[in-house]
Image 1 (cartoon, rainbow, N blue to C red):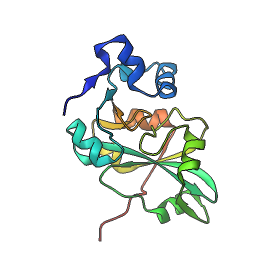
Image 2: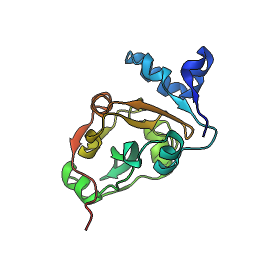
Image 3: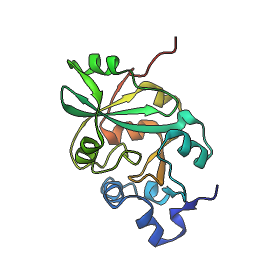
Image 4: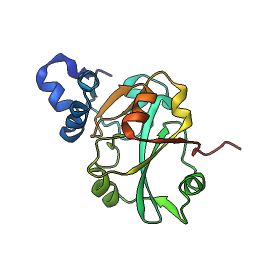
Length: 174
């Protein structure tokens, strides 16, 4: 699949990432990350679609998933090959009940639609958990605010910019 690197032109640097996310990158001094943001002609809503478009392993995709812990939104960053164990999230947060947030809550909390939620640069400040497995890679790819855009970043930097707490929250295989 052909990609367009946003470094190709000044216009594409501004249009590849969602404007709110582009502004968040600039505010953090991450213009180099903005320049490496890629836009694809086909949606990369799922981790599998993103990995196929980028040409990387499924585990190198960072999913940004919103849950509700006792009714309060929390973002969980998870590698693309794994699933979140909501019981582990519940215990990590000391919550009574944890479940997936609906599309309205995701958009209201982050400012982005499901399938394009980046790990930071959200409309509101939200508690963030990052699964420890993300740190096993030199580079991961995450959504840049739209279902068509992704950006690369070292996982340690991604966790730091997201203000995430590293935790073991993925499902274990039987």
